[in-house]
Image (tube, rainbow, N blue to C red; front, side, top):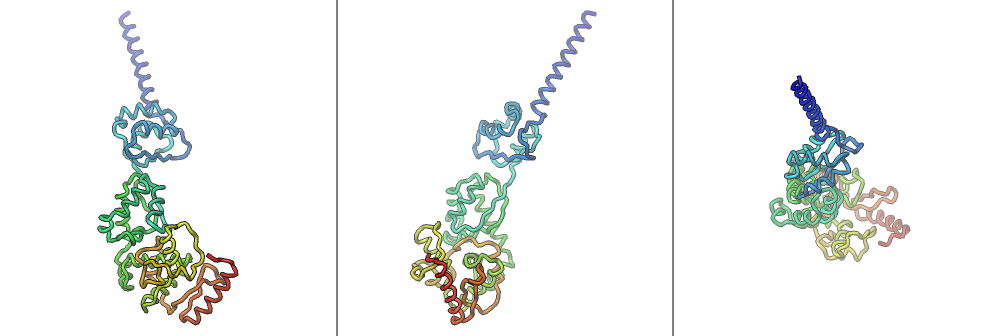
Length: 347
């Protein structure tokens, strides 16, 4: 009888112990452990991060960081920290949290447009990705990469088609540039290349002309007409004489791309630069800005007309007045000069 009581006591204590262990396991492994109210939270773990850094990153997002650390060590995550961008969902338990930051590197979306130089593009991208602007710029201008991609330092900006792209946050600068080279090749499909060939232009030259068109007009519906005008000039051997190229040449010569120039002066037309289309025939050696897709397609699908001249339409600002003859253009230009002088715009 006494032995039975001892056995019962042992059994009961065993059950209590098992219950306590089960509660411990549930509480540490399977109990929800998130502290944020949104449906999900973004976690960024830098390349080469230590387990302690991961803990610091997660601590504001979790109810009990110690229980998470115990489970993470149990699953040996502390010995194999993964870099990247991860998503954790509201209500996740420690087991799910560890799995999410171990195998769930989620791509991010990066956007870029309207950049005048590779330096500006590198700076914009570095604000969205882990890699810094210096590494990006070095990768963008690497001579071996440029040769393989079919570009040079002057026209390399044409490779980067403004759009939204899915990339990994911790992607290397070299991998990103390679991805953009592939995107360029995909963009320049058979149809676009055929249209460029019909114009007698290489894809990068189309992008250069598109950059001028884009700087000339912000009105997407006017771009095919402006593109047609420049193509008309090129066909008859006329200089492009595009004011935006003079502005770019001035900025480049003075190494000051922050200056705002609203009016091109006669002395500016004398700037010695391959980007000055008042002095050099054809398109400049590279884009004067990053042309968007609408500008590129405006060149490829340019409006057919006889216009050779244009000037700002002061009666419909944002658009231009077009002319086929120099006499008609001079009348339009005189009206524009009177208007701009009245506005007091000297530079």
